[in-house]
Image 1 (cartoon, rainbow, N blue to C red):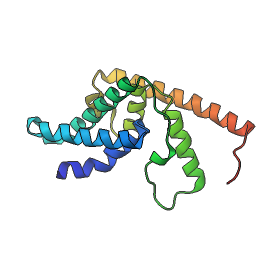
Image 2: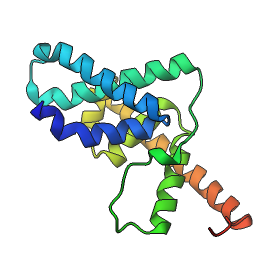
Image 3: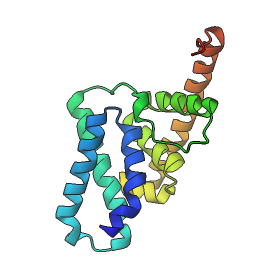
Image 4: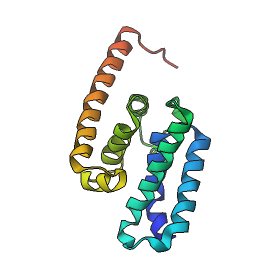
Length: 166
């Protein structure tokens, strides 16, 4: 379990960013661990463990979305825990980013989360998501553009209709 303990926080952040229901997050993490544990002896290269872990979680997230036939609503309570020194503006910006992410298609959202939030390289994302390197690059590029448009539109709405102070 030493291999997993190094990856736990990253996996949790990834699943939370992709799935917005607390119970689904727990279920996916637990099912991921169960499946990886059952197949652990078949992993030839232990340095590839993290890719196997994230690929398994990715497939479970995809299965969940197919079963639900919808994207789940964004839940602000599932935003990963940040250090105490994060200010209110940063918290608001993170919430807006997660709301914008929830509007992307699942493969694009996963590629953005893995690249921008979790720090995987494009080659590593290709190992996790499958497909081609050019496909991963396209998803990241398209995802960035879509996020930019969504966030610009959100900012325009917020300027027209400022949020009440609490």
